[in-house]
Image (cartoon, rainbow, N blue to C red; front, side, top):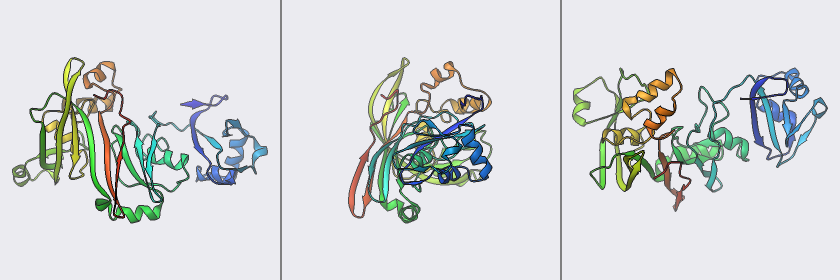
Length: 325
Protein backbone atom coordinates (compact mmCIF):
# COMPACT_ATOMS: atom_id res chain seq x y z
CA UNK A 1 0.00 0.00 0.00
CA UNK A 2 1.35 3.43 -0.97
CA UNK A 3 0.98 6.53 1.15
CA UNK A 4 1.19 10.30 0.81
CA UNK A 5 3.56 12.51 2.73
CA UNK A 6 0.75 13.31 5.17
CA UNK A 7 0.65 9.63 6.17
CA UNK A 8 -2.68 8.79 4.53
CA UNK A 9 -2.61 5.25 3.13
CA UNK A 10 -4.29 4.31 -0.11
CA UNK A 11 -3.91 3.27 -3.74
CA UNK A 12 -2.47 5.17 -6.72
CA UNK A 13 -4.67 4.53 -9.76
CA UNK A 14 -2.44 4.98 -12.82
CA UNK A 15 -3.05 5.15 -16.54
CA UNK A 16 -2.37 6.91 -19.83
CA UNK A 17 -4.26 9.67 -21.64
CA UNK A 18 -5.32 8.81 -25.22
CA UNK A 19 -7.55 11.75 -26.12
CA UNK A 20 -7.69 15.42 -25.27
CA UNK A 21 -9.97 15.92 -22.27
CA UNK A 22 -10.38 18.05 -19.13
CA UNK A 23 -8.49 16.72 -16.12
CA UNK A 24 -11.66 17.21 -14.09
CA UNK A 25 -13.61 14.82 -16.37
CA UNK A 26 -10.94 12.12 -15.97
CA UNK A 27 -11.02 12.43 -12.19
CA UNK A 28 -14.81 12.17 -11.98
CA UNK A 29 -14.75 9.17 -14.35
CA UNK A 30 -12.84 7.26 -11.64
CA UNK A 31 -14.83 8.77 -8.72
CA UNK A 32 -18.44 8.21 -9.72
CA UNK A 33 -19.98 9.13 -6.38
CA UNK A 34 -17.79 12.12 -5.66
CA UNK A 35 -18.97 15.70 -5.14
CA UNK A 36 -17.24 18.85 -6.49
CA UNK A 37 -15.80 19.50 -3.04
CA UNK A 38 -14.07 16.09 -3.17
CA UNK A 39 -12.38 17.08 -6.43
CA UNK A 40 -11.05 20.33 -4.97
CA UNK A 41 -9.92 18.51 -1.85
CA UNK A 42 -8.01 15.94 -3.94
CA UNK A 43 -6.11 18.77 -5.67
CA UNK A 44 -5.45 20.59 -2.41
CA UNK A 45 -4.08 17.42 -0.77
CA UNK A 46 -1.72 16.52 -3.62
CA UNK A 47 -3.72 13.45 -4.70
CA UNK A 48 -3.56 14.13 -8.45
CA UNK A 49 -0.40 13.73 -10.55
CA UNK A 50 0.25 14.21 -14.26
CA UNK A 51 3.57 12.96 -15.63
CA UNK A 52 4.81 12.60 -12.03
CA UNK A 53 4.04 16.25 -11.29
CA UNK A 54 1.78 16.88 -8.29
CA UNK A 55 -1.03 19.27 -9.17
CA UNK A 56 -2.77 21.93 -7.07
CA UNK A 57 -6.13 23.70 -7.05
CA UNK A 58 -4.75 26.07 -9.66
CA UNK A 59 -4.88 23.13 -12.11
CA UNK A 60 -8.68 22.84 -11.82
CA UNK A 61 -9.23 23.72 -15.50
CA UNK A 62 -6.20 21.90 -16.87
CA UNK A 63 -6.61 20.14 -20.22
CA UNK A 64 -4.99 16.73 -20.70
CA UNK A 65 -3.37 15.74 -24.00
CA UNK A 66 -2.62 12.30 -25.49
CA UNK A 67 0.54 10.65 -24.20
CA UNK A 68 0.39 12.07 -20.69
CA UNK A 69 0.30 9.66 -17.75
CA UNK A 70 -1.91 10.19 -14.74
CA UNK A 71 -1.92 8.97 -11.14
CA UNK A 72 -4.95 9.49 -8.92
CA UNK A 73 -4.70 8.74 -5.22
CA UNK A 74 -7.65 6.87 -3.67
CA UNK A 75 -7.32 7.19 0.12
CA UNK A 76 -7.98 4.14 2.31
CA UNK A 77 -8.39 1.88 -0.71
CA UNK A 78 -6.36 -1.34 -0.55
CA UNK A 79 -5.57 -3.71 -3.41
CA UNK A 80 -3.79 -7.05 -3.30
CA UNK A 81 -0.40 -6.99 -5.09
CA UNK A 82 -0.42 -8.45 -8.61
CA UNK A 83 1.87 -9.03 -11.58
CA UNK A 84 0.66 -6.27 -13.91
CA UNK A 85 3.10 -7.02 -16.76
CA UNK A 86 0.49 -7.81 -19.43
CA UNK A 87 1.46 -7.60 -23.12
CA UNK A 88 -0.35 -7.04 -26.41
CA UNK A 89 0.34 -10.00 -28.73
CA UNK A 90 -2.02 -9.46 -31.69
CA UNK A 91 -4.87 -7.21 -32.78
CA UNK A 92 -7.16 -6.25 -35.62
CA UNK A 93 -9.79 -3.51 -35.79
CA UNK A 94 -12.20 -5.43 -33.49
CA UNK A 95 -10.20 -7.84 -31.33
CA UNK A 96 -6.97 -8.07 -29.39
CA UNK A 97 -5.04 -10.98 -27.90
CA UNK A 98 -2.95 -10.27 -24.83
CA UNK A 99 -0.61 -12.09 -22.48
CA UNK A 100 -1.94 -12.30 -18.93
CA UNK A 101 0.74 -13.00 -16.32
CA UNK A 102 0.08 -15.41 -13.48
CA UNK A 103 -1.43 -13.91 -10.33
CA UNK A 104 -3.35 -11.21 -12.21
CA UNK A 105 -7.16 -11.56 -11.96
CA UNK A 106 -8.96 -10.93 -15.25
CA UNK A 107 -11.74 -8.84 -13.67
CA UNK A 108 -12.73 -7.33 -10.33
CA UNK A 109 -12.59 -9.48 -7.22
CA UNK A 110 -13.40 -8.91 -3.57
CA UNK A 111 -9.80 -7.72 -3.09
CA UNK A 112 -9.07 -5.94 -6.38
CA UNK A 113 -11.13 -3.37 -8.27
CA UNK A 114 -8.34 -1.85 -10.39
CA UNK A 115 -5.43 -4.31 -10.34
CA UNK A 116 -7.11 -6.56 -12.92
CA UNK A 117 -6.36 -7.34 -16.55
CA UNK A 118 -9.43 -5.62 -17.98
CA UNK A 119 -8.90 -2.48 -15.88
CA UNK A 120 -5.22 -2.28 -16.89
CA UNK A 121 -6.09 -2.65 -20.59
CA UNK A 122 -8.76 0.06 -20.33
CA UNK A 123 -6.39 2.45 -18.54
CA UNK A 124 -3.23 1.84 -20.59
CA UNK A 125 -4.67 1.64 -24.12
CA UNK A 126 -7.13 3.74 -26.07
CA UNK A 127 -9.68 0.91 -25.76
CA UNK A 128 -11.45 2.21 -22.67
CA UNK A 129 -14.51 0.07 -23.50
CA UNK A 130 -12.63 -3.22 -24.00
CA UNK A 131 -14.30 -6.44 -22.83
CA UNK A 132 -13.17 -9.97 -21.97
CA UNK A 133 -14.40 -12.61 -24.42
CA UNK A 134 -13.48 -15.49 -22.09
CA UNK A 135 -11.74 -16.03 -18.75
CA UNK A 136 -8.64 -17.53 -17.14
CA UNK A 137 -8.09 -18.32 -13.48
CA UNK A 138 -6.06 -15.64 -11.70
CA UNK A 139 -3.10 -18.03 -11.21
CA UNK A 140 -3.12 -19.25 -14.83
CA UNK A 141 -0.96 -17.34 -17.29
CA UNK A 142 -1.20 -16.96 -21.04
CA UNK A 143 -3.41 -15.88 -23.91
CA UNK A 144 -6.61 -13.90 -23.44
CA UNK A 145 -8.87 -12.67 -26.23
CA UNK A 146 -10.64 -9.32 -25.79
CA UNK A 147 -13.04 -7.25 -27.86
CA UNK A 148 -12.20 -3.57 -28.29
CA UNK A 149 -15.66 -2.17 -27.53
CA UNK A 150 -19.19 -3.13 -26.50
CA UNK A 151 -20.42 -3.51 -30.09
CA UNK A 152 -17.65 -5.99 -30.94
CA UNK A 153 -18.21 -7.77 -27.64
CA UNK A 154 -21.89 -8.43 -28.42
CA UNK A 155 -21.01 -9.43 -31.96
CA UNK A 156 -18.26 -11.96 -31.19
CA UNK A 157 -19.66 -13.48 -28.00
CA UNK A 158 -22.59 -14.80 -30.05
CA UNK A 159 -20.18 -16.67 -32.33
CA UNK A 160 -17.31 -17.40 -29.94
CA UNK A 161 -17.35 -21.13 -30.69
CA UNK A 162 -16.81 -20.37 -34.38
CA UNK A 163 -14.22 -17.66 -33.72
CA UNK A 164 -12.01 -19.73 -31.39
CA UNK A 165 -11.15 -22.82 -33.41
CA UNK A 166 -8.75 -24.38 -30.91
CA UNK A 167 -7.13 -23.59 -27.56
CA UNK A 168 -3.96 -25.24 -26.31
CA UNK A 169 -2.39 -25.03 -22.88
CA UNK A 170 0.76 -26.43 -21.35
CA UNK A 171 1.00 -27.62 -17.76
CA UNK A 172 3.83 -28.79 -15.52
CA UNK A 173 2.54 -31.70 -13.46
CA UNK A 174 3.84 -33.95 -10.71
CA UNK A 175 4.96 -37.41 -11.82
CA UNK A 176 5.43 -39.05 -15.20
CA UNK A 177 2.30 -40.36 -16.95
CA UNK A 178 2.50 -43.90 -18.32
CA UNK A 179 0.96 -42.61 -21.56
CA UNK A 180 2.44 -40.50 -24.35
CA UNK A 181 -0.98 -39.26 -25.44
CA UNK A 182 -4.37 -39.55 -23.73
CA UNK A 183 -7.87 -38.52 -24.80
CA UNK A 184 -9.64 -37.75 -21.52
CA UNK A 185 -13.43 -37.69 -21.54
CA UNK A 186 -15.61 -37.57 -18.44
CA UNK A 187 -18.20 -35.48 -16.66
CA UNK A 188 -17.34 -32.53 -14.44
CA UNK A 189 -19.63 -31.55 -11.57
CA UNK A 190 -19.69 -29.81 -8.21
CA UNK A 191 -20.61 -31.56 -4.97
CA UNK A 192 -22.86 -29.83 -2.42
CA UNK A 193 -20.76 -31.03 0.53
CA UNK A 194 -17.36 -30.07 -0.85
CA UNK A 195 -15.52 -27.73 1.56
CA UNK A 196 -14.20 -25.89 -1.53
CA UNK A 197 -17.28 -24.54 -3.29
CA UNK A 198 -15.50 -23.79 -6.57
CA UNK A 199 -14.00 -27.28 -6.89
CA UNK A 200 -15.27 -29.61 -9.61
CA UNK A 201 -14.89 -33.39 -9.73
CA UNK A 202 -14.41 -35.90 -12.56
CA UNK A 203 -17.21 -38.46 -12.89
CA UNK A 204 -17.96 -41.45 -15.05
CA UNK A 205 -21.28 -41.71 -16.90
CA UNK A 206 -22.29 -44.42 -14.43
CA UNK A 207 -21.69 -42.10 -11.48
CA UNK A 208 -23.77 -39.37 -13.10
CA UNK A 209 -26.67 -41.77 -13.57
CA UNK A 210 -26.48 -43.46 -10.15
CA UNK A 211 -25.46 -40.56 -7.86
CA UNK A 212 -28.03 -37.74 -8.14
CA UNK A 213 -26.33 -35.47 -5.57
CA UNK A 214 -23.82 -34.13 -8.11
CA UNK A 215 -24.57 -30.60 -9.34
CA UNK A 216 -24.89 -29.96 -13.10
CA UNK A 217 -22.65 -32.68 -14.56
CA UNK A 218 -21.27 -31.62 -17.94
CA UNK A 219 -19.46 -33.76 -20.47
CA UNK A 220 -15.84 -32.63 -20.85
CA UNK A 221 -13.02 -33.66 -23.13
CA UNK A 222 -9.31 -32.81 -23.33
CA UNK A 223 -6.50 -34.29 -25.41
CA UNK A 224 -3.28 -34.60 -23.39
CA UNK A 225 0.21 -35.18 -24.78
CA UNK A 226 3.39 -35.67 -22.77
CA UNK A 227 6.09 -33.37 -24.15
CA UNK A 228 9.02 -33.97 -21.82
CA UNK A 229 10.00 -34.98 -18.31
CA UNK A 230 12.35 -33.69 -15.64
CA UNK A 231 12.75 -33.21 -11.90
CA UNK A 232 11.83 -30.46 -9.48
CA UNK A 233 12.85 -30.49 -5.84
CA UNK A 234 14.11 -34.05 -6.47
CA UNK A 235 10.63 -35.12 -7.56
CA UNK A 236 9.69 -36.23 -11.10
CA UNK A 237 7.65 -33.78 -13.18
CA UNK A 238 6.31 -33.70 -16.74
CA UNK A 239 5.36 -31.06 -19.27
CA UNK A 240 1.92 -31.80 -20.72
CA UNK A 241 0.23 -30.22 -23.74
CA UNK A 242 -3.51 -29.85 -23.22
CA UNK A 243 -5.91 -29.31 -26.12
CA UNK A 244 -9.35 -28.27 -24.95
CA UNK A 245 -12.22 -29.84 -26.88
CA UNK A 246 -14.76 -28.46 -24.42
CA UNK A 247 -14.38 -25.42 -22.21
CA UNK A 248 -15.50 -26.18 -18.66
CA UNK A 249 -14.35 -24.39 -15.53
CA UNK A 250 -11.17 -25.95 -14.06
CA UNK A 251 -11.35 -28.65 -16.75
CA UNK A 252 -7.62 -29.21 -17.26
CA UNK A 253 -6.78 -28.90 -13.58
CA UNK A 254 -9.30 -31.42 -12.29
CA UNK A 255 -8.76 -33.94 -15.11
CA UNK A 256 -4.99 -34.01 -14.63
CA UNK A 257 -5.44 -34.39 -10.87
CA UNK A 258 -7.92 -37.25 -11.42
CA UNK A 259 -5.31 -38.94 -13.64
CA UNK A 260 -2.87 -38.81 -10.72
CA UNK A 261 -0.81 -35.89 -12.01
CA UNK A 262 -1.92 -32.62 -10.39
CA UNK A 263 -0.45 -29.39 -11.71
CA UNK A 264 2.56 -28.12 -9.78
CA UNK A 265 1.45 -25.26 -7.51
CA UNK A 266 -2.28 -26.02 -7.73
CA UNK A 267 -3.75 -25.28 -4.30
CA UNK A 268 -7.22 -26.65 -5.09
CA UNK A 269 -6.53 -29.94 -6.86
CA UNK A 270 -3.32 -31.12 -5.19
CA UNK A 271 -3.15 -32.44 -1.63
CA UNK A 272 -6.98 -32.65 -1.67
CA UNK A 273 -7.25 -28.87 -1.47
CA UNK A 274 -5.36 -28.66 1.84
CA UNK A 275 -3.46 -25.48 0.90
CA UNK A 276 -6.52 -23.74 -0.54
CA UNK A 277 -8.35 -24.27 2.75
CA UNK A 278 -5.31 -23.30 4.81
CA UNK A 279 -4.96 -20.02 2.90
CA UNK A 280 -8.50 -19.08 3.90
CA UNK A 281 -7.36 -19.04 7.52
CA UNK A 282 -3.78 -17.77 7.23
CA UNK A 283 -1.04 -16.87 4.78
CA UNK A 284 0.90 -19.78 3.34
CA UNK A 285 4.56 -19.92 4.39
CA UNK A 286 7.75 -20.91 2.59
CA UNK A 287 7.38 -24.55 3.61
CA UNK A 288 3.88 -24.66 2.12
CA UNK A 289 5.10 -23.27 -1.19
CA UNK A 290 7.98 -25.73 -1.26
CA UNK A 291 5.48 -28.55 -0.89
CA UNK A 292 3.27 -27.06 -3.61
CA UNK A 293 6.31 -26.64 -5.85
CA UNK A 294 5.47 -23.10 -7.02
CA UNK A 295 3.82 -19.91 -5.83
CA UNK A 296 1.05 -20.39 -8.41
CA UNK A 297 -0.22 -23.23 -10.57
CA UNK A 298 2.05 -23.87 -13.58
CA UNK A 299 -0.65 -23.75 -16.24
CA UNK A 300 -0.17 -21.58 -19.33
CA UNK A 301 -2.53 -20.82 -22.24
CA UNK A 302 0.06 -21.00 -25.01
CA UNK A 303 -1.78 -21.13 -28.33
CA UNK A 304 -5.05 -19.90 -29.81
CA UNK A 305 -6.32 -20.55 -33.34
CA UNK A 306 -8.95 -18.15 -34.67
CA UNK A 307 -11.20 -18.02 -37.68
CA UNK A 308 -11.59 -14.30 -38.38
CA UNK A 309 -13.91 -13.73 -41.35
CA UNK A 310 -12.60 -16.90 -42.99
CA UNK A 311 -8.94 -16.12 -42.33
CA UNK A 312 -6.95 -18.50 -40.14
CA UNK A 313 -5.01 -16.71 -37.38
CA UNK A 314 -2.74 -18.60 -34.96
CA UNK A 315 -1.46 -16.69 -31.93
CA UNK A 316 1.16 -18.02 -29.52
CA UNK A 317 2.24 -16.82 -26.09
CA UNK A 318 5.83 -17.68 -25.19
CA UNK A 319 6.03 -15.55 -22.05
CA UNK A 320 6.37 -18.64 -19.88
CA UNK A 321 6.04 -18.25 -16.10
CA UNK A 322 8.96 -18.69 -13.73
CA UNK A 323 9.64 -22.35 -12.95
CA UNK A 324 8.70 -23.65 -16.39
CA UNK A 325 10.10 -27.00 -17.49
